[in-house]
Length: 95
Image: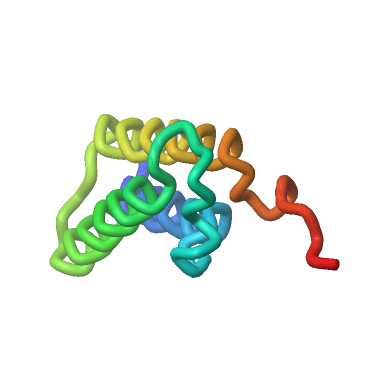
């Protein structure tokens, strides 16, 4: 039985949107000391996710390769954001 890649793609998109800090203000995403531009990476990934959401709404059936590429991109951007201290568990509480 062939997996329903549309359902899996929507779940992957939801997981990425829940995990990464897309809603952070620009002042918080750009600390000046970083390894890769967090703002540009988040903007790029947000546009990729939006494009996939539109393609899924239009009835496109993603391939397993499409899923793999998006998951890989998400993991790489996650790693950069983690190094830059932008993930919720890495951030220091305000005092």
